[in-house]
Amino acid sequence: MRYWLMKSEPSAFSIDDLRKKNVSGWDGVRNYQARNFMKAMTLGDRAFFYHSSQEPVGIAGIMEICGLAYPDPTQFDKKDPHYDPKAKPGAPVWFHVDVKFLRKLPRLVGLFELRASPALKRMALFRLGRVSITPVTAAEWNVVLAMAGGDGPFIDK
Image (cartoon, rainbow, N blue to C red):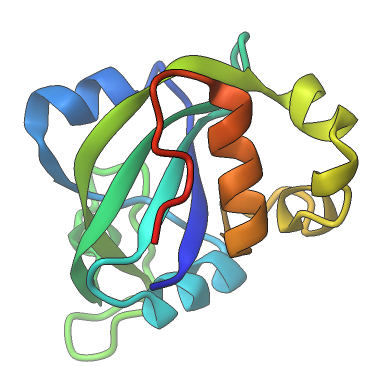
């Protein structure tokens, strides 16, 4: 199992929206590195749901990859803000995965708190800039879970 961090603006799609739907496609990603990370995901991988761009910013919950990468249909829809005229049904450019809600964290672990943790100083979230999907190491995963508190378990095997 691998671990990931996936960012979404809560005004567009939040952890609570995912909880209501239970399963959703993670569409609209228009960054090649993030797309490649999605193509590397496997069934059962875990991902942190990260609320971005609006305060409070931080990790809000956990989801599971339940559908492997497949063409993002929004790239073909001229009415969708994620439309890409270069993409063709026979030659898609953009992909997405399906994610399943697992749980909301007992509390949001904020960006400033993440940055302040010495154990997370090399986290890809801080090294890869504005990439909306980044890998997370198992050690980082467990540090964040411990920071979130709650009744555990903190070791996600």
